Length: 225
Ligand code: CA
Image (cartoon, rainbow, N blue to C red):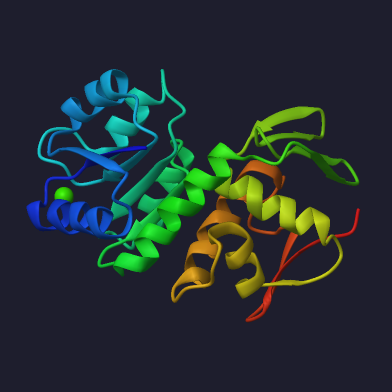
């Protein structure tokens, strides 16, 4: 199990390395403060997961992601101080699987790393469907409206859960548990961002959704097709 950390803040590198040492000693942490070096390490070290900061001294985290996505599907979590939704959505759009906003709690961080790796290692091989939506859960490939739409691991998990419960409201905490293994403070905001991105991929008019509907303050549901 190898973790590649692309992060220029020494304190965060130390904190994350220490967290792994204590709670997940078999994980090897490789780190660099430079984005360009990070791209090279994705290629040479073949990490199992990448933790990527957005603000780096040489090139931005977005560029790093864009460059290594040309040759690698490695699960990637963006680690950012920017709670700005626009940045997060852009990160997901460019192929990140999840994101964590700094400052983060150590346990939450490790839980989300574990959840992403578990999902990646043991994807459930099945197809879930509702009306015209057909999702291959192992690959995140969505067939809809004659199109093939690639979903990130997180989007795929959210949609799987909504499809399985089509027509019924799925609460925020149940969705968070399905995606990250546990509910945590801030999960409602994270879900909102992933849902927004999903709508942009599948709704003809994402601002006026007809498929993935919001039950304000409670959760989301997939309109019965
Ligand atoms: Ca930084």
